[in-house]
Image 1 (cartoon, protein in one colour):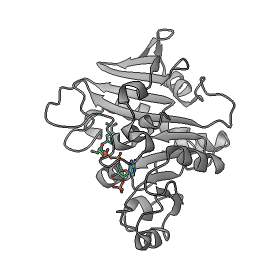
Image 2 (cartoon, protein in one colour):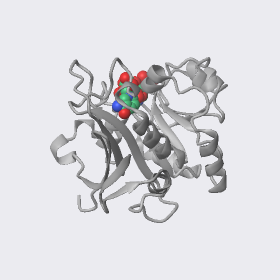
Image 3 (cartoon, protein in one colour):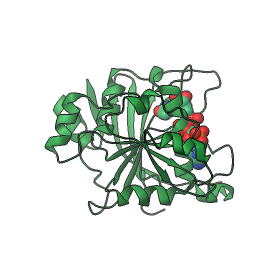
Amino acid sequence: MIERIFPDPSVLSAAALEHELLAPAPERGRSGTPWVSFNFISSIDGAASLDGLSGQLGNAWDQRVFSLLRQSADVIVVGAQTIRAEGYGGELLSKTAQAWREENWLSTHPPLAIVSGTLNLDAELAVFTQAPVRPLILTLESAPQGRKDALAKVAEIVTVGTDSLDVELIISKLTARGLVRIHSEGGPTLLGTFAEAGKVDELCLTISPLLVGGSAGRISRGPAAPHTARHTADHASAAAGMTLARIMKADSMLFLRYVRSTDH
Ligand SMILES: NC(=O)c1ccc[n+]([C@@H]2O[C@H](COP(=O)([O-])OP(=O)(O)OC[C@H]3O[C@@H](n4cnc5c(N)ncnc54)[C@H](OP(=O)(O)O)[C@@H]3O)[C@@H](O)[C@H]2O)c1
């Protein structure tokens, strides 16, 4: 059983859960306005992975929420390290989800947009060879030309910065392609990059009832190199306030939805 605790407490049927998670964010402005959402899972002691993967933190409810959150996206943005760790080969949506998209005037498959500064990605990866639609690769002008040429055979290369990633350029280039519901599934470096740029509109966070211990990182971290213009900014003043918009619960797992505070 999954229930909404806030707002309007209610046990959610499968249909009600779908309705809740597939609806466009009510906080978003006009329909053409870009909206950047992230979805993450963390253990209660703050680990973003278990044995190097996030899936181990979840359960069937988390899988359901994860799938529904990606279902209505125009594009799914993922950092290259998550692709290298988790794979992402093949179709990202079930046949039922694909049919829902077609009924709702969306493309059958949302394209994947992979963020990579170095382009250290093999063109033979399943994420390219088994992709139902050509992925985008969001990269830098400074990335090695040979890798750009190799990957251009399997993906569309989009330049989103010279030596450092320009998050506003990512959003504007995706929006120019009509990809305005920008949904990201991480990982932590990508969330850190968007957070530092002040461009996270929504964060859905599953809290998994596990004490993982060990040295796993948290859901957000700064890039290793000063990739973004705001990297050196005072973090305390740059930290973005978020407002709690929904709490759901299934057994001991919590599903939180935060949106960017408008008064910040
Ligand atoms: N708990 C969760 O919900 C969750 C979600 C997703 C992933 N994860 C876990 O997180 C781990 C991976 O995390 P991660 O932080 O290392 O990976 P990530 O954010 O998925 O990817 C990092 C990579 O993306 C590119 N990138 C991201 N920001 C960049 C920037 N500002 N400038 C240039 N390139 C940038 C770089 O690619 P290049 O190296 O190719 O240049 C960078 O190495 C995995 O263990 C995965 O399982 C957990």
